[in-house]
Each structure stands twice: as structure tokens, then as C-alpha cells.
Amino acid sequence: MQLIDTHCHIYADTFDTDRQEMIERALKEGVNQMLMPAIDTETHKAMLRLEEQYPGTCRSMMGFHPCSVKANFEEELAIIYKYYEERTFCAVGETGLDFYWDLSFKEQQYQAFHKQIELALHHNIPVVIHSRESTDECVRTVKEHQKGKLKGVFHCFGGSPEQASQIIDLGFYLGIGGILTFKKSGLDVVLKDIDLKNVVLETDAPYLAPVPFRGKRNECSYLKYVVQKLADIKQISVEEAAAITTANARKLFDI
Ligand SMILES: [Zn+2]
Image (cartoon, rainbow, N blue to C red; front, side, top):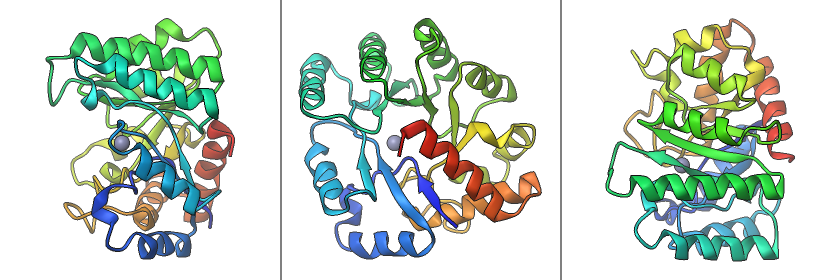
């Protein structure tokens, strides 16, 4: 079984004591690629270092997280543009809108999101979208730019069937992780009616650990609980669920 964790912050310092062992556990469970979304300039170096240590296994995205968008967002974006002058990345991300934590930079969040969508279009790579308490707004923003070329994923999807179908209609994937295993998330019911060709898997490590590790530090090897749950919901084998979602991730991120 081969799995791709399409969203994990494994450069986070919570893994400083056992990062190598954690990656080995993931590889043992068949998670042989781990895609790392950027947050902001504070963590770019750690992320790029990890990519260098595990070529072909840990891959970097480059972008600017909406929770890090402050008054100085244009300076941060300038640094990101510089990286793209030197090389490409597997995706622009993570970007999007976060209306859960802080609304004081809402306008700047929108501007940074628009700019990063344009960056993804320019480089013909996917955009990885964070849409906490803002799924409808993110869908609208993507729609403005979708002229048939934009591709990407709504990471950590936890929305309604209507939102899921709007995302799919835009040609985007649903990033599904540990929330699927949470009792009462309702995501199992939503996923029942969704064709797996629209789904990629992620852990969002170190956050959102699946059951039976809910509330603990999440890690890439726990992706097996997500794919198992997905297989149960769709009443297919875990191998089939893995094969379909892994093929989707390969196609989307061109890896
Ligand atoms: Zn993330």
C-alpha cells in the first residue's frame, strides 16, 4: 500500500526530538511521500532543510498561511516570490482565509490569497487552500480565478455536501484527514456520496490526530487510520481506497 500525506507540517519543532523515527514510522506504513505546506518566513528554513534531507520523500510547497497575514504581508510575499525566481515547488500554499482566529486582517488575507492564486496560475502548480470558517468565501474567490487552468485542494475539508459539490465543480480536490474519524463530525455522511476521484488524503500533522489518537500529536503514519475509515465508509478495500487517493495526489501535485 502506498500513501501520500498531502499536508503535514513535519518541520514543526514538536518533532525535533524524534523526527527521523517519525518519518521512518510513516515509511513503514507506506506513506512514502509527505508534502509540506509553508506557514511563513519563520519556518521556511526548517522546511527546506527537511526537503533536502529526504529528497523525493519530503516535498516543500511555498506560500503564506492566512493566520500569519499581518500588516506587513507584502514583505512576506516578496520573500516568497524570490523563492519562485530560483525554483518551483509542488504547490503554492498554504494560503486561503481564516475567519476563526482573527478578523483584523481580513482584507489583507484576501489580497494575499488573490496574489497566491495568481502565483499558482503563473507557475501552473496547484494551490493549497486553508478555509477555516470561510469555505464559501474561498469558493467564491477561486471561482473568480477559475478559467479552466486553476487546480488545487481545499485542505482539511469539513463542510456540507453543497460545499463539497461546489468545490468539485471548480475542479478542486477535497483534502480529507483525521476529522473523518471523529464521532459526530458528519464528514462520513458527506463522503458517502462523493466519488473518491475527488479526494486526497492528509494528516495536517502535528494537528488533528485521528481516532484513536485524537487530541495527541499527529504524525504521518496515522494516515492509515484515515484511509481505513474512508474504505469503511465507501465499503471498499483499504488497498483500493489507498490506490485511488494516491493516484489523485500524484496527478494533482505532479509527483
Ligand atoms: Zn496546514
